[in-house]
Image 1: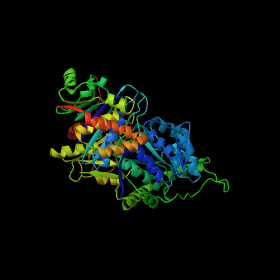
Image 2: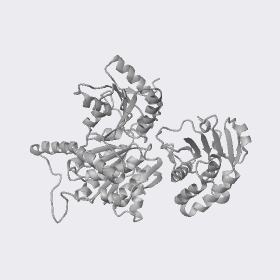
Image 3: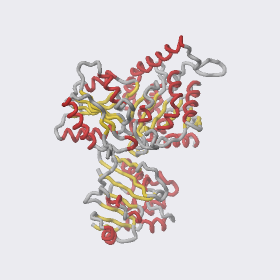
Length: 182
Length: 392
């Protein structure tokens, strides 16, 4: 079972991010569970969303305390202690950032692996909005292979209808451009 | 082939209600129930569901409108949570005693104060004695399946009672997980159109709900209790029929690895699956533990419950609410009372945990087993233990 925690700001789509991957994984025949942090979300405030993906039915309903992966939608959140809280030692941070993974790792003193992609730039180019959730999906699936691009594209189409094409383009570009530091 | 889809449990419930061809939905939004009726209002607005969606100004009116609609013979649905359920309180008794079938999903949430939107069972435990049939779902699939079951039972000729389907707020209502969707044709087979015994209609006037003077009130209330206790037979039959048509099996009381279990956990709702994992982990260490979970809370299935636990030495009962002034939780009190007359009965230790959204991780069950064992050894008069409390 893979446990993923998404960090974003209210309005950036962290919850949608977790939801789309869960739907795609289930469509592929896997088991998944996605849920928000159940808080009083407010636009702009730091929010979290959670995702479990497994090959067997998931019975665990507690919060995710020791994620395998954290996905950070907004680079200004990288300094928050909550971002790496409980993250496994051999875990992975996938972040939206204009800086290289090496620089980020050094700057924040992360012990875990870091992968980075300039999702804000890609989102502004393709969506004309600084909403980075679908872009970050491309980075996530490139690095973890938890779901295929096809299933995720279908989930995007169902969720965004007319706007799906642009979101898919953003996702595919992030898939290509992500830089990983082991 | 049934379609397996990843969807939010609230949306799944709304889709189930749609397949049941409801006539009237009257509801007022309250977190964490809102997504259910929000989706239903969309289905009505876009023409996918031919029903009257009646938006009202309070939950008191939501259930009052439901009562009136059910009296005309309509198939009625509503949903609520917490303060909303509390605001319905006085009408809930009227609905059951007037034998008006209504199905209501309660997305269980804590009661104020302090204001708290998160999950526990305080709301429904305060409505234990309303005379409604009450079931609890442990996951999204059950929340979906129990919705069909609720309509079938509520409208059964022998029952004619309202039903609450309890789903944990947020921990079920807001989770996206796989749900196996059912075919409309099969739902039509399982749930025939409602055949009301008596209806309100201007062409054929009747009086419903008049004053019950002392000469008749006792009999009316006794009738309600008899009807509710007798409904168990229909509840069970409707689950048997459900299995025949949809393939999934449900019972009033369920067991998990209890065959040789010396200690049995008792749970209700979505914490059950986490408890199963705890049982698995304890079994790996050689502990003889098992789990019993209560799906049918009202009418309480005394016989089935006793049969499920009679071989155990210790019961560890997990309550998600407090029965204030009794020094225990409501499920614990119920079980102790149910076992009182039995010659052979286990030691019962009560626990309260997970109030107002406090997480219950698997480790909490390891703690429970230690406490329950040591209490049983000492044989001390058991009191409930409130887990995970910051006391300093």
